[in-house]
Each structure stands twice: as structure tokens, then as C-alpha cells.
Amino acid sequence: MEPKLSGGGVPEEVLQSLLIASDSSSYSLEDCLKFLLESSKTDSGRSDLASKSILPYILRLLPSRHYLNLSLKVLRNLCAGEVSNQISFVEHGGSAILSDLLAEKTKTTEEDLETVRLGLQVLANVVLFGQEKRQRDVWFRFFPERFFSIAKIRRLETCDPLCMILYACFDGCSDLASQLCRISVGLTIVAETIRTSSSVGSVDDNYWLKLLVSRICVEDHCFLQLFSKLYKVVDTVLGHRDETFTSEQVFLLRMVSDIANERIGKVSIPKDTACSILGLFKQSLDVFDFASSSERSELPTGSTIVDVMGYSLVIIRDACAGGSLEELNKENKDSVDTVELLLSSGLIHLLLDLLRKLDPPTTIKRAQHQSPSSSSSSSLNPCPYRGFRRDIVSVIGNCAYRRKEVQDEIRERDGLFLMLQQCVTDDDNPFLREWGLWCVRNLLEGNLENQQVVAELEIQGSADVPKLRQIGLRVEIDPKTSRPKLVNDT
Image (cartoon, rainbow, N blue to C red; front, side, top):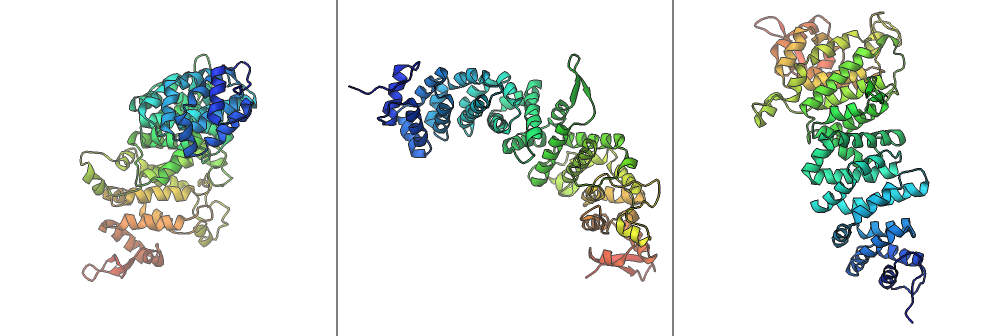
């Protein structure tokens, strides 16, 4: 007599097919699934099970809820890199089955959350590096309602595979990317994943969210729309929002800052995004009370205003990094580059004004016989965070690189001596001296007027000769004019 697998409520055809596929003499459905789970962990095992067409029977097992999570693990493994199983999943309505299944599992119990996690892993294996047809099948079954409800689950275990699915579909289909970015509910889903990751994880915890944010904010033009989704709504009826910055917005800025820094030279921050971030920087300056600033910690400081200020400034620094205007214009002579656009918004004037309002660096304070912790004037302000002065100087230095209009503007605004004062060490600004020297080098390179001004300051004793020598310059008296000039120190 042929052995029969016990499993009340499960179709007999399904039970017997699982028994045959597992080559098992066991009469337990659980044992059979465990055998299939082990077999599906290898490429050869998945290929063998694909030849036996086992996946449709696992799908038919899901609605019965018999060993649901164990069945999902088998299904997840079967779809991991095995194209024939992925195709079979779509052809046999796997997306619809999982959509109905997960709709019931976004509640509270740990078992339900595990089911959601496993279900998402199945879908991720189906769409990742898959054909457009499979990506569309999953997308149209889950967007937007299912994705939105899952995004609101505050668990990294569900957030990571959800972001993997969103990114794979976004990356593979241009019209799906448009739905995610251009339709309000699409960015709302992404905003919810950011809320989840910021509340239960860190910037580095969700690799796929970082890829998604990179595409949306750094390579596309949806930063401001996504940032706006993260304001706190204070009137759910009318949709009014509190314009105070939120921790989720800080999280997004920090992630964009990391992406921009890691990919300097590979991607350029869109011009509208850079201008939006400059606007956030100005907004944070408007609401921040410098006089009350006493704590000088590294970013993130825990103050949303200070963190928005700091990460915005760092993003602007990296957006301004790279080649000269002339080099950039070789690629597109009719294009206004990002730095030009920021400069037209008064960036240099703003930064020089900020530098003048800050306490001098601790090295200068000591030279003036002041306590490093005291202010030289009641009108001067401490740095709002550790590294603020350095970041300002780094932005100016990047903007001045082979841009004569920036070099001239700083001279015309009497900023050369101010920038020379940044070539010192400062307790609150690590690497200030290095950035200061880089900035002065860029201000003097190819600009005779600036070199003349600095040479005269040198003769007057206002500038320090050794610091100039560190950037390859020295002062000489021109025998024809009897005026000081800077020359290359060879």
C-alpha cells in the first residue's frame, strides 16, 4: 500500500506531491517540509526541486496555514537565484497569494511579524535581478496599499526586505520608478521606511534603504518632496504640519550626506537638491540661537536644528567638491553647474559673515592671552557643533578651486586675512588647519591680486610665513616695483 502523508485540511494531491519530491518515508508534513528546506539551500538542490515542479504545491499549501512559516522558508529558498522557480511563482499566482496572506499579518504578534518578514524575503528573491515581468507582477499586487501597511511596521526585519523590493522594482522599470517618486503615496511609503529605520536602527543598518535614497535624492530630483513628507503633521484633519525639524529629517540628511561623501566623483547632487539643502541650512540658521549654544559635540548632536545645519553644510561641501568651472564646462558649455547656482544665492557672503561672528580659533585665543573657553567679545558666538568652523572653511575652499570669481569676491569682501586666520589648530574643529591651508592655496592659485594682498600682509607681520611655506609659497620683494609678492617656494 502506497504511504500517505498526514495533514488534515491539505489537499491530498499536494500532500502526496510533497512526499514524492522529498523522497521521504516520513508520514509527517513537518518532516517533509524540513527535508525540502534543507534541499533548497543549495543551487543543485533548488535546481532538482525545480525539475520536480514542487513550487506550485508549496503555494497551494499556504492558504491552509499548515506550518505556514516553514512553508514560506522553503518557498524563499526555492526562489533564491533559480529563474525557473521565479517564473513558476508568477505563473501560479504567488504574488496574489502572498498579498492576501500578508494583509492579515501586519498586526502585533511575533509570529505574524515573522510571517511578514519571510513573505517579503520570498518576494525579494523573485524581483531581485529578475525580469521586468516578475517585478511588475509583484508591484501591481502590493502597490500602494500593501507596501504602505508593511512600511508602517516598526521593525528592521521587515523594513530591509521591503526596501529591497522597492529598489529592485524602481531600478528595473522606469514607469514604476515614476510611480514611486512622482505619486504622493509612493514617497509616503519611502518616508515610512525612513521613520522605521530612524526609530529602530541607524543610517548603516539598512543597505537597501540607502540605495533607494541614493536613487531618489542624489541621482533623481525628489529630495525636497521626500524631506517634506517627514515633517510632523499636527492637524490630521486639515493636514497642517509643524515646520520644526524632525529626527527623521535629520536621519534622511545624514544618509544623503554619507551617500554624497562616499560617491564623490561618481554622482553629482542635482542642482535643485543642492539649492533646497542650502535653503534648509539658511532656515536652521534663522531659528538657531547661537547665544545659547554651550554644548560642542560631534554630529549628530541630538538637536534637530543643529544636526540639520551641520549635515546640510557637509552636503554642500561635497556638492562643491570636484573640478574647476572650466573643466566642468568642457562637458556642457551651456550648463550652469551646481557651485555657480549656489554662489548666485549668496553662499560666500553668508559663510564669511558666519565666520566673522564666531569666536576665534583656540590657537588665536591663546596668542591673545584669552582663555580658550572664553569669548573675546560678547558679540561673538561659539560653534554650534564640533567641526562647524572647519565645515564652513571646507565649503569656501571647494568653491574657490580654480574659480576666479570666488577668489575675487573673497578679496573684495576683505576675507583673505580672515581665511589666513583659519590656518591654525582649534580644539573645537579637528582638521581646521588642513582645510584652512587648502582654502588659502585655492584662493591664491593663479590670482595675482590675492597674492599681492597676502604678500603685503606678510610684510606687515599680519600673516605667518611658515604657513605659507606649507602650501609652497614664500614672500619676495619685487626688484622692479619694490613691493612684496608671493612666489613658488622651490
